[in-house]
Image: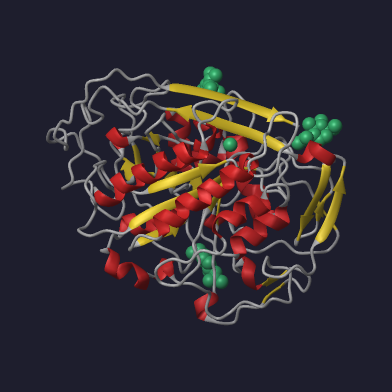
Length: 480
Ligand SMILES: *[C@@H]1O[C@H](CO)[C@@H](O)[C@H](O)[C@H]1NC(C)=O
Ligand SMILES: *[C@@H]1O[C@H](CO)[C@@H](O)[C@H](O)[C@H]1NC(C)=O
Ligand SMILES: *[C@@H]1O[C@H](CO)[C@@H](O)[C@H](O)[C@H]1NC(C)=O
Ligand SMILES: [Zn+2]
């Protein structure tokens, strides 16, 4: 147990802020063919006049006690302009995560997205890793599989084939590419390929990649003293980071450029291990970094029309964009569930009724019983010990009484029917299955399949920068 349950896996992808070439060179997308809600061409142009400023706060890797307070400490007391709680996204891996915390994160209105089972290098964008995560998060973690809509690649390492596979699996968005000033486009669909990371090691621009209907929500980097993407407080190097005031200045000045410019979303992307107490031997005390991030978020949220949303809320917005003045009334921005869910069952809202599972690899907790062994890549959902019930397709977490095995929702407004692609650990099922619907009742429309087109010339007028780009993707995982 002890520190064995602590995982640090981090991706430092310092894409250069000085992209030398026009990211739109060679990109071709016809907006009269590629239309909302299922298709959007990549562009820096805002989708409507006077859009809101969106802030994405994301956490990656294991959802566990050791980092839970750090994550919640950044946003749990914040409110959006409509008075509802600020929201965040956790790209959660299976290994070392505590299913009870997954349930609590979801129940609080935040998002759980897929980040594989093992998070091992060099590459985990495989069917078994991704589907196994969906399987585990929905059974022991209690997140309806139809609510697991997005994916981030460990080490931000993606491939064309894996991106296409994500779409076949029913994912609605991908969030691994980086967007610096030069290519800070609003989220778009990959019907006509990407315009981000063009100069990086992966570089799929102008390679004929087409992933219809798949939203790309890039990580928006900051710049200034050095380029930043994930864990900006560790730049330019983990062992010798700049002062927190320098990083704060980079974050606020980049925010200002977004806010006063095209209002493309901005974000802070963390591995929360870095913003907690020291974990010898290699994690220094991060409490000052956490304070700095809170200051940055205070600044962002002090500006009118700035909203802290989950990645999927942003995707819902992109499908049907409205001016800032109309955001508060959008269904996906509402505060609470109606009717109010009960708090006397194990549904993530209370701390009653969970089981503690002492497994050889460590202790996990779940509302849905204990697995007989620790999850693994080959067996992500081990059989359950005991008599609790998993959530069925026709009930949402908040209303599922896993002891009585009964759905307590009796109202149409809380009814849920999960029509997303059924879990199937056999990769050959992908080619056999029909096109997934990828939602449940009460949620937004599915991705559909917008048609791309080569007609017309590149959408954007050229903004040619001059410097030479160097993209560095350094990735390392440290298991304690
Ligand atoms: C990214 O994945 C490829 C395989 O697709 C692998 O060869 C490469 O080493 C990985 N890069 C990193 C930084 O993990
Ligand atoms: C769990 O323990 C087994 C046996 O020691 C080991 O093979 C496996 O890698 C461990 N899994 C994790 C996630 O640590
Ligand atoms: C849920 O949706 C499926 C597929 O559309 C349908 O066959 C089923 O009858 C629905 N169940 C309920 C309880 O609405
Ligand atoms: Zn990760």
